Length: 371
Image (cartoon, rainbow, N blue to C red; front, side, top):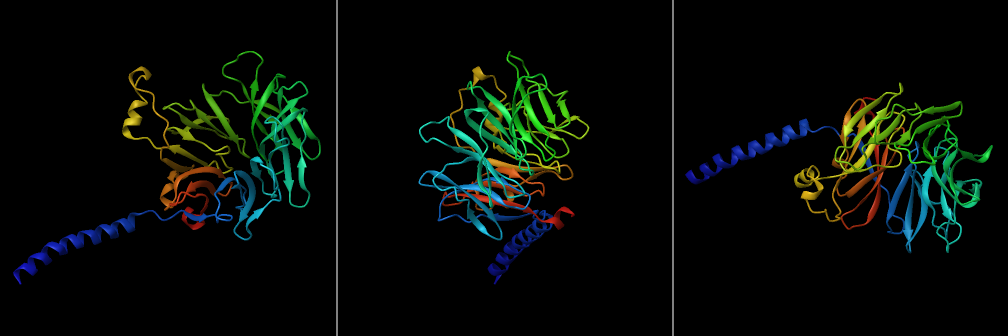
């Protein structure tokens, strides 16, 4: 009897402590901000999301016999093929009109024979042509169906282009007449470009090519790589890309550059900025030793061997700050963000427990965001 009483007096406080701890954890744990959907596989094959429009439709590819086959997914219709059998399109994009842009090879025996295209459900595929050469690459597309990219001219030199239905493919140049590299286009037709001077100029000048005139993107912090532009002409950029002291920058509506947060070894998507000024991104996770060695002189540490490090994904929101996303991805590893739409939905790719690559969609729960 005395032994039972001692056991009870020992177990009861421990159980009570655990129960109180669980209660506090449940009360203090922040409510889930997202609904998570793992896209179904097509025939059990790996799927890789690439783009996301504002209707929640996911553009992606599934690999069959080593060749990518494009698909479009939504909650109502599931996975749909695009009828591009036998081709290996790349750089796929989808807008709110369900138009798909990308690049497809035209000659399997030549790596340089590629052409940009626009696909529509009613008209099928339209090849965008070139600026006189053999190659054109689609880089970005807006909701008006305008596409910017790079194309060879007759002399084999790559030049920037803008394509739309009314004018076809037109060459783009910087205000000083030099060649340029397009990066992003918004729905107003503003194009974010880097000027390619014929002489070595550091840093390269950046411009917004507006339908009403060009605007220099200055003053721009030194060693900064602009990434994308949204409908309010805000620009996301990385200061000191690839450096342990990298920062993600935001150029606001008043053309003022602000440091948003410090970044580690970043894996940014092609379009990290939406019209809400939210930014979604993925970065590698460093151990304490890795963080320390990044601060040591190169001659003092041995070169790091390539490895597949863990990743963490985040959304930065102007009102809520930085929000970790991995907490919502139970059973998914190696997740990285690939796109963010204007409703705050995020799509990315990861791996399930059996090693299958999958596509994951995170949709905000409006009431949890105060909407």
